[in-house]
Image (cartoon, rainbow, N blue to C red; front, side, top):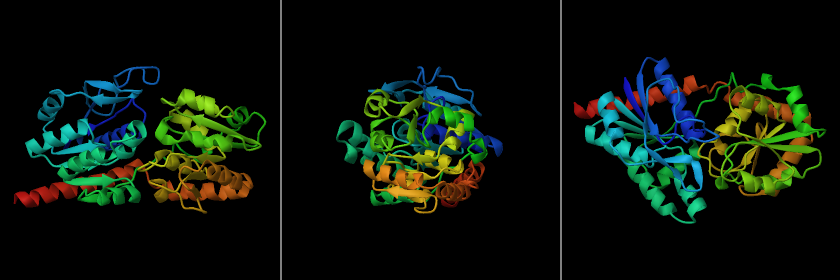
Length: 377
């Protein structure tokens, strides 16, 4: 099967859309299919040293411009490269990853060619618009609805996202969660030397991993950073980094980390804390659970599917920094409790590999192609 994977972001970009698109391309190749990735020209800066990326399949880069105030995010510019790539690849199916700008053009191009399309909802653009612009949520939903309604099938990463799409009039929605590399993210990566260097004499290591951007609400860690005996580490980068360093003077900022180094950091934590209330899935929560670390997260969006409150971690009211602190304090009170939550979290996600999730995706593709064939007949 020939698949055109049109994505709003792709490595070397570091975000959920890019990572999921990469894993999808890898799985298609493993299963003997022929994917082509079409993505915006990547960010070229300290966090991403070049636009080129040696992926598992050919990648066509579309000219792009940086999002104002957030240069790591690229917006595809109009042009003929996408259409030319589709004509050259002649796909049996178009996969739209987080469609909004480039994905909307990909959807229109697929419709003109009579090619079935599967749209994967990954980013709550309506809430992003309200966060960054103070308005525009309704307009964002109109665009989301128009793009996804034109697709043969929309895949939502969590129950909360599926409900959100249905309530906003998006038809033909099914659940498709994200995978996790449970071999890389593993409790065995815990590193006593690394822990000692980060703790610097304190007893409990608490960490956040993710982008440092306004919608992530990392500032809510302020109360947690002041807990006695607690060292808070912040792993990631983004436009809010400088402001957060000033707001969280007690925290240690480690910048962006990837690969095995990131896996060691996850496994060396005692508690993982996520702060953002707008996650359609929340891959970092799943990676922390695979690493055997108890999780504290907002009771909103993707974490509702991932965190079993009182068994694998604790859910707290969104936007409540004091509730985050109090949950960390509960987990700080007992190593046995943390170990029990961490082990339960590992068991909950260990089998949700990218291979298993990729095969689920192929099942969705097969259903869409069968429906198209039945209509044609």
